[in-house]
Length: 424
Image 1 (cartoon, helix red, strand yellow):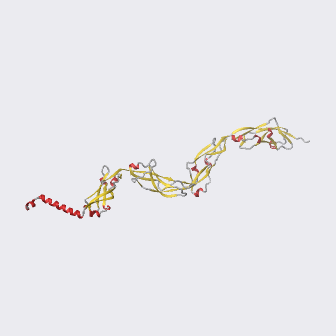
Image 2 (cartoon, rainbow, N blue to C red):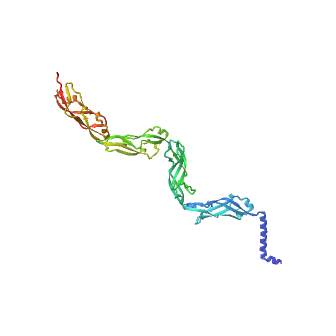
């Protein structure tokens, strides 16, 4: 029997198994195997520069960057294990064609004694795209309104461009970039660092952690300027071509304008002048019409409340006209008659034609009843240069007195009778 027992291999193996089982039971009764779950284990992404070297960018999808990890080990080990001991790693050198990276789990403490360590998530899922960069011009976007009586001046930025980069699908959607500044109720200049805001073509804000910028904040100065309404004064110079004249009427489409400047500057400005040099009518034969941007004529450091304001100026010019006026003979007066002579109008003329030249409006304003004619008898007699003027009829010029912007264009003559008064 002894020989049979010592030579029976099956019995030997059975004995070993029974012995191991008894040992296992004893051990588990003393230090049983258990399970413990650790939450919020962040997956460490290593060797991410592999994608960067390929000029690609990635985004972790489906929450696979934070795990719940189940550890199976002896109770005594689990009691001393904490979440900080659990490591989850995804090595980007092992990115698969479907853009996943296997997660490797281990413990920094007693890893060899752990029976198993697992998670419901076995791989990090990625969105991998080509990297794209774009440079955008920066603009300032003003929100709100300053205090009454003030407007916003032209903002000044420390830099006027921003460079963005990220996934091609996101960068392609970004159309513009702006610095947003709120000026509500301000009455003085604003100095601030404003956030860079990205917009798509429809002016919708784009927010994405996948987009990086060379700067997220830019220093900007926003002037807040006091406003004031001042008149626009127009000045002209020059003389139109011969036969033409300025009517004196100057029309302007804008008579006053709202300007803005710093308080110290605007206090000394009471009008805006369009200078003579810009309205020269020299040798013109028709109405001069010009349109200007009023910005041209503003003093330094002054702006328009509405920068697009323009003014059209018309300087009216007309061709001079000629007109004959019939002056009754009774309105012709003889003056300077020497005492030794008797002088009177001769002939049968009852009226005289006076030819005047001027603008149509001025000619219409001439009143015949207000025109007086004068014959300077003494001057005429002196012009004859004789010792004694003989009796007779003489043809002399009439001088006229009239008002208005008209001129006489022809000499008017009359016959006068001169007789020597005989002494009694």
